[in-house]
Length: 184
Image: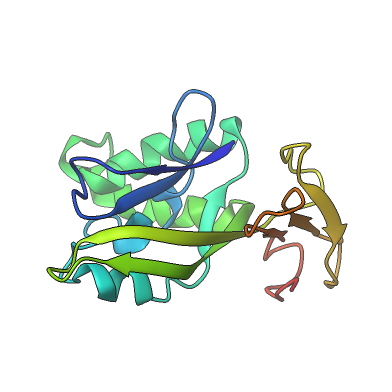
């Protein structure tokens, strides 16, 4: 999986970011309610925020799906929750979705804006971003990252550091493995 930042039509004065698999499936959006009007993956104006406010916003812990099998299981439930009128069981679409994500083993992501520059008219010109990821030790991270154990109850998660000279790092933990404790 890759963290991908995109500057384009969706956020012309900023960026969107995703955690994607090789097929381009977003492993963040399906498990981070609210399902509509959610600024979680937006670094720039939108959802009632200007660019400066968006880049200063604390996004908290952003959850992500760990593998393709879980994505394929959650994706139709997520879509049914987004459009219950089209779901096979419209009366239970949201309940089915929420029940499924509560049972899903997930990783977490924290986004920190380390530095940003804006034009006088509030256009985000640049940003230095740090992504801290938490996931179980068996999660397949890029070999260039150097996993380190992060103290936690239960099965130890992994703390990832970037290659030498990088500003990004990743901390990996699963809340259900660690009884909701942070591995940092």
